[in-house]
Image 1 (tube, one colour):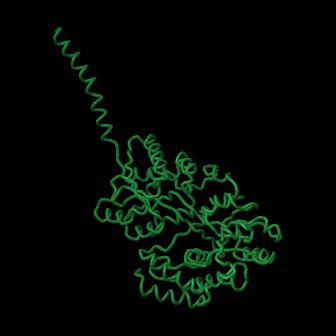
Image 2 (tube, helix red, strand yellow; image 1 turned 60 degrees about the horizontal axis):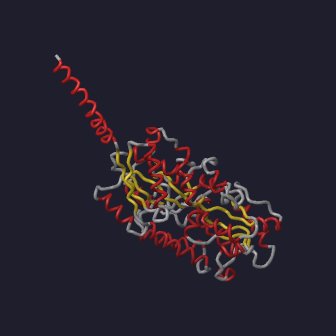
Image 3 (cartoon, one colour; image 1 turned 30 degrees about the vertical axis):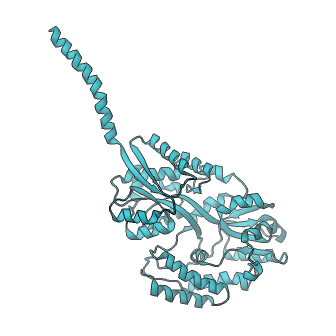
Length: 420
């Protein structure tokens, strides 16, 4: 009896020692590893990204992130395409907007709409316009991670001198043109406005006028549509008809930033990346507002997005991680502290720290501009299209072609060279 009792005690003790080992092994088996391929952190923000990953893993101990970071110039795009083609795609990866659209057309991205309900995450943390910018073929295909946008930057002193009220979010082309004409009357070499006449401005401004470079189904090029011709003519008229914007001779190779800082420019369409320079050099009050539209609003969205691979075995975990990088308050704080572009959340409370860092006045306009974000054409031959259209637009800018002829020629060349 005594021997039996002793044996029982030994067995109990052994179970106590062995059970934690099995429990530990089971926990390890439950951990999901997510491979994340990315480029934007680089050396500058590598530690910031690693801190974000550590925070995510602390909140989600069943998920481990394998950080596959590369430099932008290290053949990132080529290697990613090769991995996807070889069935070795990472679970999730970072793309810029141009490459996002190319991948969307190839079908290598997993649609994300259902994952919001499956994970309980709220897509309303991002603005409707921003979600539209990262959608393709009727479904959400990416999480917007970070952004830069273009806004209307204005010299408040020149507005005061011209007796013109400051811009508001509901301003139209007509409002900005009227203000620009009054500011231009203040003196020689004082200009009402400036934004370049080139492809990147044209494809955005055309959407403010109901135009675009392709039909919504992506099957037909519409470069020389009547809406687009009217858009390019409007851009040219500001220089040659209304003279609110300098031509090449009047600008005399002076950067637009210098014109603005020297108090010679009333309104300037530029990106938020210009703010730090202007805070240092501009000695007058300046503010920002959402860019004026015509029949619609349209704002440039330059940013990087996070995509879930179509072939991943762990879509929910990858999706949760991308949302954490984009919208978790701790990750947002880290991004703002590092000045690693801007977070994509639309909640003013979350973005309060950024908004209250002035100048400029009315910095909330940067967040509001995301409601009108537009994307470039979803086209694998995007670079070729850019070159064709830009060449003809610049010829119109320089007085060598009319707006109609420039876009007619661009349409003809694009139809011959671009495969839809």
